[in-house]
Image 1 (cartoon, rainbow, N blue to C red):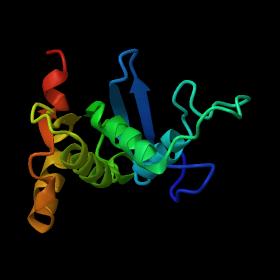
Image 2: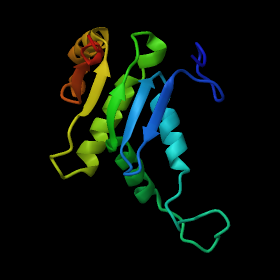
Image 3: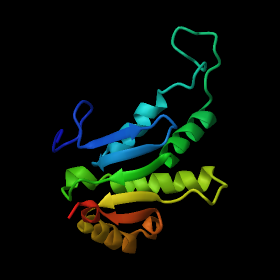
Image 4: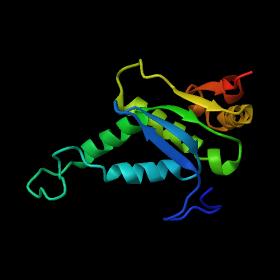
Length: 152
């Protein structure tokens, strides 16, 4: 655990693993994880666009950067939440909401599937209860009880 109170240099748990094909899996999603991802991705340059040392390269416009950030959220295909301590899962609400909005705004392809969410049952009860307040959460994930993944 990084810290009970997020700050610029220490934060709660949240890791992203990006594969060679650009698709990603999240390992825990503590509060503030989505904001940190967006800040990190904001400065990730496209090859040949505004690269360091190449001051003559065209700068990426805001609309293109926004599209790229949304695509990075859509490319998160799975989330693993290790256990039901708040510093490991409270960021799931914003991540699911932002990803859902990105799918709506960016993708005309209805084949973009909800993220696979592997977590303890308590997380799914939390999300079901939260969905009563914010129905936008419905259909944003495919639940997989992490206990089902244990060997006998």
